[in-house]
Length: 83
Image 1 (tube, one colour):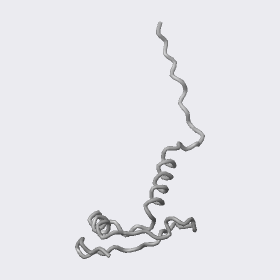
Image 2 (cartoon, one colour; image 1 turned 120 degrees about the vertical axis):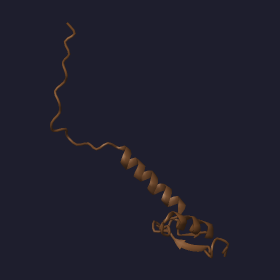
Image 3 (tube, rainbow, N blue to C red; image 1 turned 90 degrees about the horizontal axis):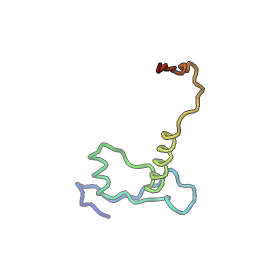
Image 4 (cartoon, helix red, strand yellow; image 1 turned 180 degrees about the vertical axis):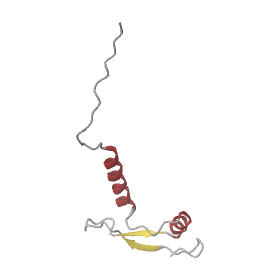
C-alpha cells in the first residue's frame, strides 16, 4: 500500500455499477487520487473509471438530444415586402 500523499493510503473500492461482468467489481483508489480528489473537495468515487466514463457519455447524450414538446404559441412567419 502506498502512503506517500499526505498520509493517504491506496484503497480498494467497490464499483456501484458492478453487474457481475468481471470488470469494475473492485478498483484501486490510489493515495495520489485521494489527495487530488480531496483538494477538489470531492468525496470518494462510487464507480470505477470505466463506469464513470459510461455515465458521463450517457449524460452528455441526454443533454444533446433536444426535447420534443409541441410548440404552443408559435409566431407567425414574417412576411417582408421588397417593393
